[in-house]
Length: 491
Image 1 (spheres, one colour):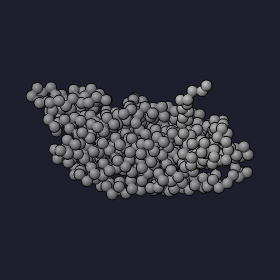
Image 2 (cartoon, one colour; image 1 turned 90 degrees about the vertical axis):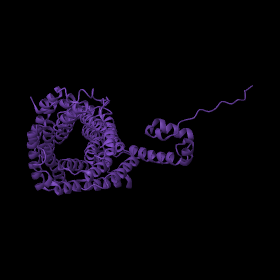
Image 3 (spheres, helix red, strand yellow; image 1 turned 180 degrees about the vertical axis):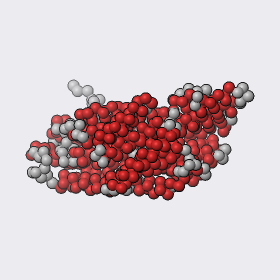
């Protein structure tokens, strides 16, 4: 019998009030959530909550107890939704946690407000809304007084900064608050500290050519796995096995990387955690790309994309789509690759995950900047957007990629060279024609008649060119209006 079971035995006490029973269930559920035992946490709340997508039953409970129930159910909904990739789960979780935080605020329980907002920030982070998550976490940190709460907020804030590409900010944050991750906090929180420090060191070590950072990252990942094993947090053990595999991939140690991914996969299959398993598949696909096993990489990444499309983790989906775009490019299917990479940019940008969108745009330019399948105008537009979305990038690798892509774009826009890759006279004329027609349609606000006049050609000639040679530009055209019939009858 585990601790949770032992504590729930207290529910057999007939003298407990409805509020006391509910609070006991919330206490047990919170501990189970902390160690990643989401199914067990659901069982602990079973009298109050029927499951994902349902509102908990708080009828007859006082305000504070109702707030606790709403909070724990909301937090658990967010975790289960991410694990199973359930559409709409993060929105539902946000609604419950926000309602809970509002009650705690009304009751002036500032510590509970901070805790609830921390879980609310996680929901925004999962959706890729990094700015909203950062504001919530910083506000919560100002209100938090307990060491455990502050430690949790630091790890989550460093996660947001890392996801947003602010690696040096994340490193400073972790180093400044390293002192609070001592024996006073749980193995789970200490594992989180080492995990996030390893992530930052791994990225900066790769980007800035710091082998000492990479060696230190291996040590930090190993320490994180140790603490998560002590906490019996199998999901986080698997997550760090995946992270360590990605680092070893970057260092060229492909064999050991596969071994760590295998270990992570075994754990996650047993736990049926589809969300984390999709991330392991994405790492595996990148590893297979490095090994030039493109067809196998395509099979693996397709599985990850399919799973992530079912949930609301936009940033993770965008990353997986970016990897899939690279696979298709390496297999020579340029049209499919461009379409997938366009979608990766769109998915990330619409969710607010601008750094992910910017990196997807750079990948599109790197893979297709020299190919005429990507029109010059669109090439320039993707670079402009990438430059804006990555303006706060803090690692030299991203800055270097931006500069390389800038040179590729300038070369394409400057002039057409006979020694360009895949050059043909027809393709050069076709591309120039498409640019001029697109510009004319833009200035004519979609009017084919006005665009034809600007180009000095007949209206019907432009329609034929659009329908036959430049179908991609049809979306710029205004919808055709049916001519009204004359009310005057012909004799």
